[in-house]
Length: 339
Image 1 (spheres, rainbow, N blue to C red):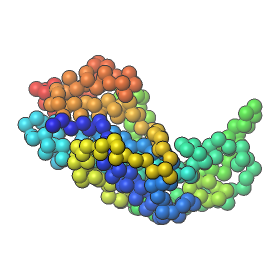
Image 2: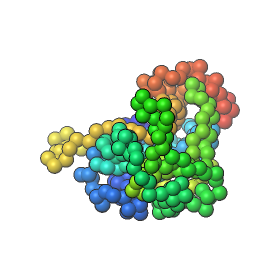
Image 3: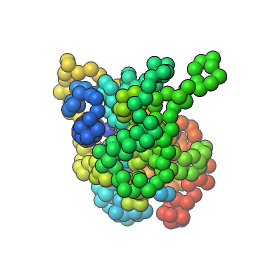
Image 4: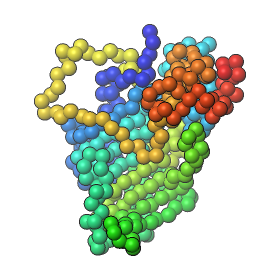
């Protein structure tokens, strides 16, 4: 029986939602977020859950194969397929939105929290004029202190993070028609640097390892982007254990109940879909995912898997079979016979 890792049934989605909701409640309590607690399933206004193959934990250094005990042999057809599938580490990759907060998940970790003024809209993002002339209750030192307190509250490894270069800056705002910028009471605390090398059409770029945005008028959290480098070769800035779903394969294989049993509770509003995971290039992620899924499930060669992945619509048309020049190291890694 083939296993479809690109389709999420109700059993998988239900457990994934429960995992994300429990972690969101834990973070909301630790950070004392100004929101209803505990967050209930009925408080979710918008929900995104990645397809199961997008929830597989990858190693953080090239080649980005799944983080399993088999290493590069995860694609070796001589190892029973079920053993390879059960070796995959699967955890949340998605987002939960309540009326006033967004909780983002990536790599089986809580990856970020953002205060909202509307679904998928950051607090004050559409109304920065309202902050003009407002007095800040903190300075850059106060922003740093708040940021480190919050990071410690969600079990980030402050001993490691404190050794990294950091900066604190304020938002500079240019009014329409004006020539001079105005400094607003919004602070950005950036810690560390993460480098992403050029790949395909994607140019190389750098981002902070961790960013905390502080609203100075109320000394409250606006947004936090956490380091998500879980993996056997990653840097574990997050002391929380990964949110792994140990029976994920069984949940993926579980059929949905008959349609007539799916009764929507009248008190629940339909949950939409969407995603906002910041810097993540999902065309690239999907391209890699299709390659790995085709090799793992269909025992495809690297060449055939790349050609298959390049033809999938969710890669945005950014890749072609010529992308093998970019991913040529796969042949060296997995063996030229498979190439």
